[in-house]
Amino acid sequence: MAERKLLPWRKMWDFTGACEDAPDLRQMLRRAAEELPRLIPCEHAFACRAALHPSGTIVVSVEHNGAPENAVRAYCDRYFHEDIARLYMDRSSLTYQVDWRQAKHADNEFVRDFIHGLLRIDLSAGIPVWDADGIGGINICFTRVGTARISSRDEAIMLALRPHIVNLYSLHERLERIPADHLFAAELARQSKLLSKREAEIAGLLCRRLPLHEIAALLMISTRTVETHIQHIYYKLHVNSRVELLHRLLG
Image (cartoon, rainbow, N blue to C red):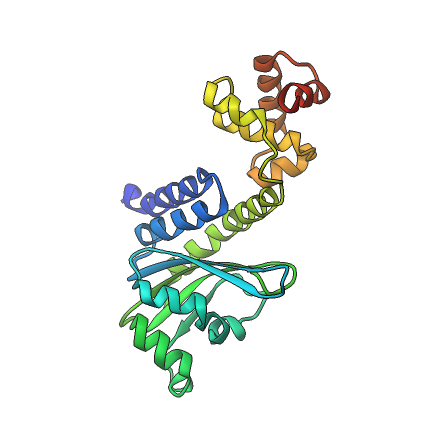
């Protein structure tokens, strides 16, 4: 019995581990969409991202697990702007769920043509993470057919996953702002096996001049653990300070 109770939480560690191993935001979202059905029973899983382009337009991308390609393209090209679940969502909500069979949705074009027409689903639920502007962000969600509600277990899992998703999104969004041609020798160190994966990650964040408490918050580890990793990095790279580390890794 104890083994059965632990199983969902082990699956959650597998989910978060797969997302944490992703090298960039797109891969993180793809892995979230791939892993979510193993954690929460569903027909389809989606990981959507919306970002405000400098031109003023909103760019939408969707990673999914087995959804019809024509539905994904239609959502990115048009239906994102008509998605009533997004338009009327409370920005302070930690999770959400929508029963698309309710009568109040019956005459809505988005529901009629996209939800019932292309996806053929009855219910959707997920974890929304909004940008500061309230426009962009990400949404990790799943859909079901013939299910009228989200169970307390489903809700508990989504609430437990949310802080991990928020932190990973914040980390990758920051990293995306670093110029693509900014080469960190920490990445080379990862290839040459000088540093462990976690040490290379922390070395890269040190090069971005993040304070220790912020690195700890982004990686969801203690400041003491960060300090221990830094000691190992200094020893392996034969440096004695952050200044020397910057010279070693950034030249």
